[in-house]
Image (cartoon, rainbow, N blue to C red):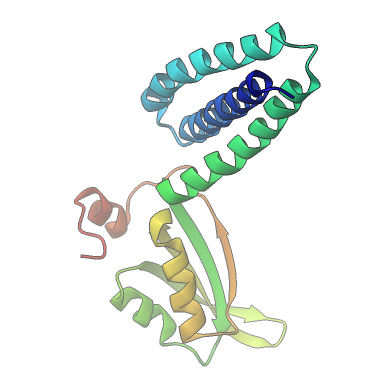
Length: 180
């Protein structure tokens, strides 16, 4: 493979990484409701896509170009999801079930700034404390670490809420005063 062929492979690979990274981030932004930012990103995405696909189609007889396109695509998905993880858009709802003896956990979490709704629950092995905690995704890992530190045996389930309305916590988030 000559230097021109190697350069073509690197260009196709790089273009596809950039294209798919834009595609992945744009798709996530669309799903999270950031439609105008997603539309802006899509303008760059489509130009990159057309250029990259054009290079592959113009050189379809070269299998290494097709392979570079495919490998670049997969790499772009990984990079795009890593970028989205760093952006940490939106909120996460965490349900926690802990032993009944750990009645202090809700108060300790509230003292750290989390909005916690708690109630008594019955489990297979007796009384439990159940909690629902809403937090920005950027604080998700910190919340898990705090829960595990306070109760290593806690049962944790997390999901992303689609709609949030009302409550003291939403007002705090809107004022930008959470965790300050």
